[in-house]
Length: 327
Image (cartoon, rainbow, N blue to C red; front, side):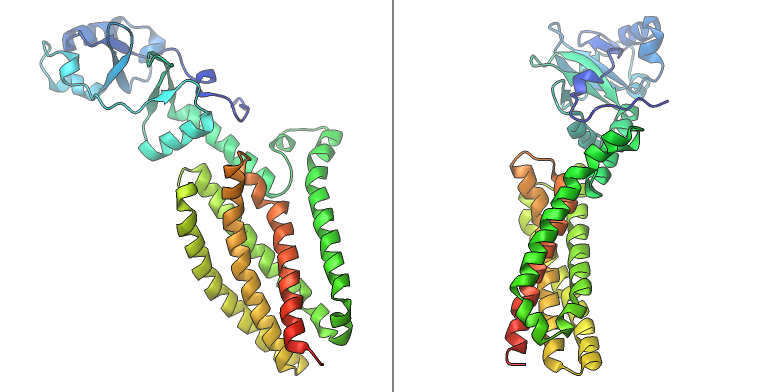
């Protein structure tokens, strides 16, 4: 059975202390002899041999197959790779997952503050961490906690869900206030109320799509703060195309259904603007959360939905008021 690990643990808490390391003074013959006398735990799945100096500092790494392609009297330091990808014992385990995704190694050496080799982490261990990371992000996106997946306690599940539902309540009250603010416009053109669900639905979907994609790219190490400009440009272009397509489709349908060209224009423009801005909001919120040291996954659940709802209603009624004034 796979042991569930807590998020936020350091790599030092999950590393293995059994690994194969030799002195840089060893020859290949010395290394092979050492390999034969090492404990079973060290050699059960040998992938790399780590090389240390007299102080125990990590100075290189040798692949097992390299031992077979050189003469026995060749020193290990002469064939080792000196540029070693390593991780620190205090590094967050989720960050180490990104190292494995980027470099695709079977194992990585772990060093302490003095750069001494203290352990290794394997790809198998990182698979477990990556699964937990994905579970946690999914839980936050749907508005709960990862503990609910395994919890059988009804009170605990309720406690996990209520804070997220409270955000929905607050956003719902804010939307109700906005509707009350534009109550006169709704009474003047009753058809405005008919299209609120589809306007909100498309805006929410766009925001969630953008936020979820950014959060997963962050988790995989494919999106950082330096990528904000590129992501915003991408969402702007995608939002313009999708927004215009959806806006024209719904606006055209509204014009034919209600025989009101102004209503169709109001829907087309407001929907296009809402979808574009929702994509930008969904892309920006994860980076904003990361900037303030908050888990970006929190931004892709009820928070992005609430933000998109409020923004969409304001745009919808402002644009509608402009086009439908005097009707």
